[in-house]
Image 1 (cartoon, rainbow, N blue to C red):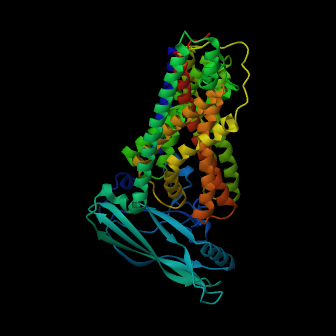
Image 2 (image 1 turned 180 degrees about the horizontal axis):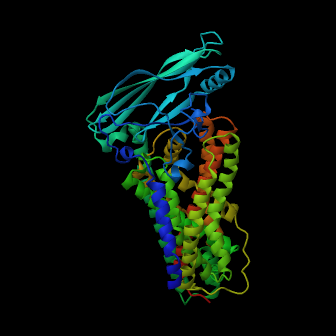
Length: 593
């Protein structure tokens, strides 16, 4: 064990270097500390353009025929998460100095030909917007506008003037405002003068509060949001209380009947068949489940994802990650690598307790299952993005960085966790001995079959997060900054509790029906929550958005599928672990043959 720990010391150093490079990229000195002197140059970065209704369909700013700043413009790399989110900041080379007003000044002369005019017309018809950054604060503006009352060759107008209003507090930039002005018709052969102006205004807003202007308080802190949290909380209390009352009362009666030594065999069998069917399968309930390697990998990965979500939410609450470009994505990747030990430990322990023999195979599947599922979906989406020449395409170098993090950090930690879990777990410490011959499972009513229990199990967990899913989807697909991570933490904890309660009830009903295949049923019963979330995403796409086109549709449903796979594995693992503790608890006090 000591050798394994020593072997991983250099990998921690590599992780530290990668984390520092990803989270704290090199930037100019003034942008790093966000402090300027009067007359210091301030860089306006151009980022991307794209149709307003399709958030992920973004392109390089200079994919439109704007005046290019030169042959070797300065690029700004903000970290791993920023690249994965499709950002590419390029110095616009517009001269701006801190505290110095600029009257209308010329950026360049734009000579129009037929091709350029057609490109601009297509962009204006598709409501293209453009994004800029100054001192890490974003600005947005549309490319142009359409006047349908004018002639066909003059109804498309391109904005030719950028009016910047910059609010500062002493030596720091606080707020920005961009107004696109002076629309001009697009006529082939004409020349348009692109201009800009800058006005500096003092403000009393402090630097820590400068990002508040981007937060939509009325939307996220609406009464319906508070009501949904309260409603979910009351459902948790009711459901947990109901489960406790039913389970304790029923099990207490079952224990009492089972412990009576003066009952004859016929009475005992009659009571067992009527009320205590779960005791009749004590010789099979701890039988090794089918596809143990896959189940162990899924449960281990789900446990890791559960800890990952909790960790990221806590970090987001403390560190306000929504302020930085790509900070959430970077934090997810780094925290996923760090929590890989958990997946290996849980998977190795589960596999060892069920007398698994191929622990290396289990470890490899655990370490690679979810990353390779995400890689497969991402690879398909990347092909689409490359074909469309979109900024959403992930560069090869970024892929290498992500692979290095997985290969040298995540995979070794999963291996270490598997070794620890395999060696420290108690093998086959089940309360009841497994019989050599499996007991036949009697036919029961349709609603007591594993498939129905699995499908119905996800309804209540989905109901507990239904409203929050609307806010999460809206923030991701409709240009809103999600910042209420306190709400998210409460909803996530509610989801965990509801999932455990529902799967315990489903497992109890299944065992009472003398069906001892509870392991996979408990997993799928909880994992079906993700199916309802995906069905809701279909409704959201067609009813709440105006997205269109193959590119955006594939990215929407691809990203949602990736999210739902993670949610399903997480909920499935929680459901299985909760049911496992329940099953071991109820069989601990009965007389096993």
